[in-house]
Image (cartoon, rainbow, N blue to C red; front, top):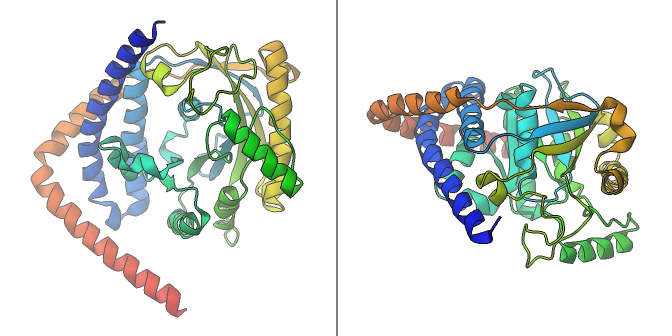
Length: 364
């Protein structure tokens, strides 16, 4: 497809997402107003209604790809917390993983880790903030207390959050591969070509949050690959585009409705203790396995060694989610004069409660 046509179609898709996200913000505000009085239930409503609607109106514009899944089964018990870890080839990875989770009924529990800069994007950033997205700066001094406080709220509520994390910290580029390999050599860690060396700090912080609780998360390691992938690693200047592996989609392709018809995901399930014993060693082992799987995919255009477990999952596209969103937003708009004072009052109460909790923690 011509680059100018791709940009035009992607722009139209972005406008569709923006308009629906603006409507969704109204819907979210109403639910946020009740959060201090029942945080767990507000979270369930936000996930069941708003987050599901967000997936629906995005998928309605950009039809879903068929998921070719191998390996272990996806989680079915939504009362158990889950941490999803995955390789990060391109900026669209999270969307396909999210659709896989949706197809298995986990949408109300999902939270995503994203770059802090995305929180500043008007409308989209506001919506992600109200979805309780975990925004990270990739600066441990800043992120550590932030993640600890973030996870503490879910543990306090006994809320079985399903968190999506990319331990590589960024998408793969040739410059990052060189830096990653140099760091790995200095630390005596594996040299990787198809993926970046995973960072252990983020996963360690998530696991630490559950260390003294009876509620232990399961860890699902996802290896994602796209049709036509031959191992090409773009330069930083190329962004998310490829010269050879042109079928590997970016979010621009998703918005332009030109993404691939299928996406391949290999799943490996691990218990809490498997990862928590030595997080760095655990991740190194999994990323070496990913390297082997991606080499296998290059040779066969599938995860051939796991072929006996292959099954297809096609996420549903639900127009009713979009209609429900607009109906809910219309009601929210009518009730806005009531919602805004409530939201202001509740925010003040929540701020006072948070300061009180912080003081009591320091004194203890």
